[in-house]
Length: 385
Length: 131
Image (cartoon, rainbow over all chains, first blue to last red; front, side):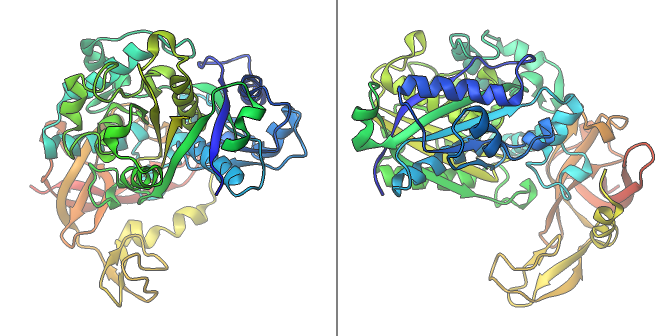
């Protein structure tokens, strides 16, 4: 396989984008990435999106986006692994370039979640779980992660405060991110006293409903300097894995084994270990998710993610900065776009373009994206050349 | 709204806890599957799940999906039945303070939801604390 580099990235400010239809949300970010790369064409496209069908009544968005980006007739398809759709789209783009099918490929992700009401959004998101054996019984997504939190708290003594530290940190980082949906800080007390969604998770433990897109342009590493003036960011490793769809069928409800396996594959390809990673963007769909992910990726011992989250080690300047972008909690979580936005952040950090959010001496970054309650995970490791 | 076929075909599981046991390795699946993820076997015998077990984890849903909004807040949990099979369901007839991992529960047949204003009534299993 050819080595692959990221030469362009783009995303707009995320939030409730009432005036922008689905097709414009995607196209806007795609154009930002194309302009950033400085390329005059793309040859194939992968569009990560969990459910444009349920949110917007629109399927076939591979074609829709190729049309509205003005790049038809290039091959273009939608990639879906629930909330890991963006990361999975990026992985497909890497394979496409890696095997030599095309030289300039766009990996994008989009979700437009505000065209349905709260009940509609809850329903669409619930399709990432087991529809007949979880959702049928009235379990919501926050409910499933709340059960994961209760299991983790029971097994390891993780506390309500430790969960809240994740939200406080991510909001602190996101307050400096011009693209974030909620660029403001929150306090531990605000998180703990916010409206309860599913015990023990309050609304400030949960990532929001967001409209947004993100895009990245990839090419063979050895063509990067000819195609773009940007410093090429090399894909060092990629991993993807699945786990049971239903939380109740997991070997250990408090462990994300798909994340562990996807991470192992990425580390192995890159020839790296957790201590080599300078910073990581993780899938904090709920505060407990970040705690479980930092264990599964090997940054903290199994069961120690909670104490880790409260220790300061995952803060900017700590041993392993987690979510310098503000994560899903502060930046927003337009489901299919998230995985690609993580690539945008990692790329910008490695280029040194993050101003007051910059991780100093960043040379190797990781992005971890996850679907459902951990039924899918995709992990990438990128590095400066 | 789904056709009633979607509800009807799950009745053996939701009403009678019918599961499948792999003939080769003995692993039990609920719902039944076409292929055993333990040994790859494709032959199964029908078994019924036990109706007692213990809660493994739980939560209280306070912001509910549309079909359950009149029931909120309600408890849901994962229980491990006496044969090791785990499933997810509501925990009924319980004070939220009683919820804890290890709580002994039994399965009861209850109404779970209604499909829309004029739709079918949907039944299934719920966990009830053993008293």
